Image (cartoon, rainbow, N blue to C red; front, side):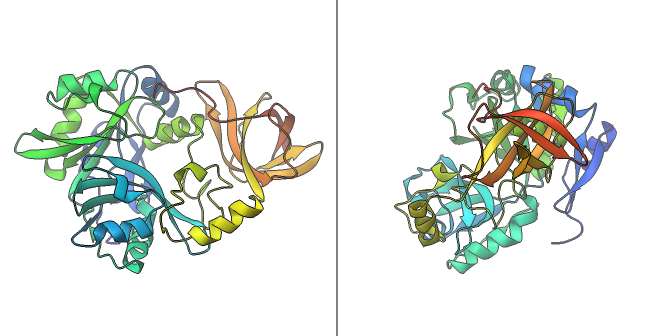
Length: 358
């Protein structure tokens, strides 16, 4: 990956006083006013995230549909032009290389959006199936407009798409200035919203227009607390090459009737039953659980946290934990989190931790 990859909005983030951090080789805003205030802005009104660090792999030409049908776990062939789907990319042994969104742009035209750190791995998986993905990292800025008032704000700012009437996981094209953006009814917060693929040269104007309309700038710190409240998986936490989708509660992402890579391994896992299970933890005692902390039940270690943070909505610590299915207690059981020499009392719950607007 070149060292000069940067969001077209970097100077805007600096101007707004953002605290920057490295995400997959990109300098991206972690927070502006603070994670909690930005989180609450998305839950209560509208926030806008710059997620331009996400991958942008174009897959086109004869046979591209069949290539992606073998690469991705969703039923690619059933997607109509103007539809998108969440999917996984797996190893031959059924572990998770990454999770992606795929957009059908045309009969044989696709956009695959992986995590920033996994662009090369996902591109390699597509090539393994005979595809020739083009890395269009600098073509688009990606803005996520999220929150209960997001669709109305977007339609006021950019009339024409009628985002408020768009079905979930659909997308359309909208002319802006002398270019065209893709407006997708997708997101990672649990709230209503759209994700905008804006030509890089128009990114500052689009971002500024959304802020002027009343959207609050939100950083990737709030994006993580928002996704965790919904129990959404995150690569490197609930999604790794060492965790099967069925263990992470992602069986719904698998189109079993398609020939995706890793299918045979997962058929065996399904037949035998996954050995591990992902559960939610809501803390009742003071403290914030973190990835790597242990999950304790009746004094025994029965799992390990894959994610943990403070929930601004619930005002307590929450987390996701992976453990042996045979050892994990049932929902409602009282547990403890082992956190660096101390314990935090809690209870097993079934995610999501809150109910989003979507």
